[in-house]
Amino acid sequence: MEIAIIFLSITLLLTIIFIGVLFNKYSDINKKLNDTINSSNKEKEKLNKLVELEPGDNAIIPNYQLEKTNSDNTKVSFEVTYEVEVLEVTKDKVKVSAKNFTSVDKIGRDPKNHQGIVNLLQDKWVDKKDIELVMDTQKRRNIKLNELGI
Image (cartoon, helix red, strand yellow):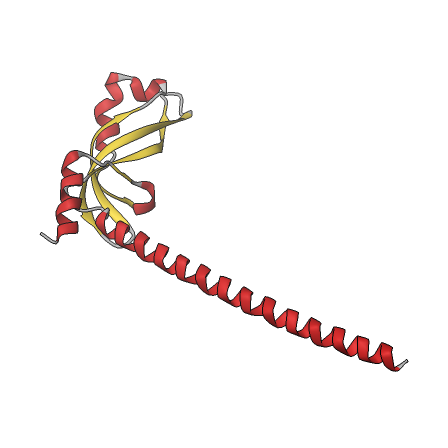
């Protein structure tokens, strides 16, 4: 009986030591993971600052939903992808001026609707999340200049 109690006590002590070792390894791994996440977030913030929308940038607004009312008062939906120039920028919104658009829908490809569709997005505010920046040579040049601090 005494041997069983000694054996169980030693087993309990070894188990506690093993749990302590595992906890230390977990803490080290968790710390390294948090450091990696923090450095990754800092790199993303730096990249986002470099690739921010600025007035004068070109962008696209893909899959912009439009509706046209026909002569018989039926509404027809279609999509266009606008090519825009950024005029002003706020925290969540961007003021844009449409330059052109493309569409795969019949209504969007109709030449008589072209100017009206372009005029719909003249000097309008849209959400930043709906805009995709076009990385042309001028934007790449500006990013490099910003990196150099010029």
